[in-house]
Image 1 (cartoon, rainbow, N blue to C red):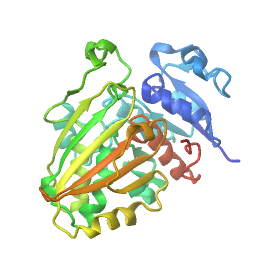
Image 2 (image 1 turned 120 degrees about the vertical axis):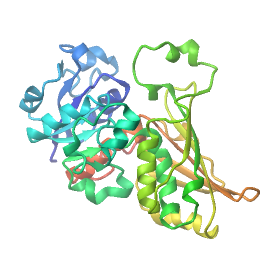
Image 3 (image 1 turned 90 degrees about the vertical axis):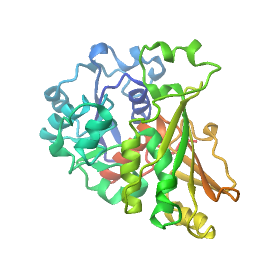
Image 4 (image 1 turned 180 degrees about the horizontal axis):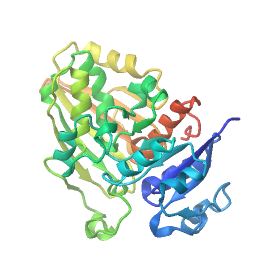
Length: 345
């Protein structure tokens, strides 16, 4: 069986850990390079004892250096790095002939001015923006298969964009009436020391954050605008909930088309999608059914009193919202089965 040599850059965070877990067991991926400046010299099994006994668990972390990464023989690099940092490595690794799947926000936006507005700094690699493919496999599979640089979508955007796109494309909802409230587990904030993320601060507590302008709004509005054929501006409020992982999003929008077409539009879009599970009218997505998987569950309903469609979705923020989706794109760009290394329940 053919395999592809893989590097994971920034492999010690929660997303990096999930990438490692999936890639170590992927039948067509050979992990040859993992980087972490703080953990250079340690093996995977030393830093993450859960991997002890897994093939490749003796691989040692190295400091991130583009020449050394390329010398490892890696053909594809996953970047699990903060925005602003990822672009530098993407540029260097592309120059050395690697294909890159970036899990940061650096290449998700088409407009560098929007990037600067939402991320507070000029875009670090403007020349690559036109080449980058927004890696939502259910929507851009053909482009992903030919890509050299994939911008893997954010966790919140995946849970919001997928339910909305079919309805916007069919003109079934008013694009200017969209309101979303989402809840995410604490791992979504990253693996870092911060008082608001301590157990005693998060446990038995729910709170909104990044109000009123979460950074993910930029890519959500971009993709919805493309689908609607007009500029979409929406309201989005994220909440932190006391779970390790999982995202639950509830989106509503004013119905302007035929109610009977809503379910049909979702089925037409996703009946053949490997990782979208449609729950139908009245189905309420539950994070317990998607954590540790690459599935996104989508249900919907109609509120007759307000004339609004309700879209209900759930995913794992580290799975379909990050590492799993990136590997799904890797499978497509490598010509492997889309489900290779990912069919877990």
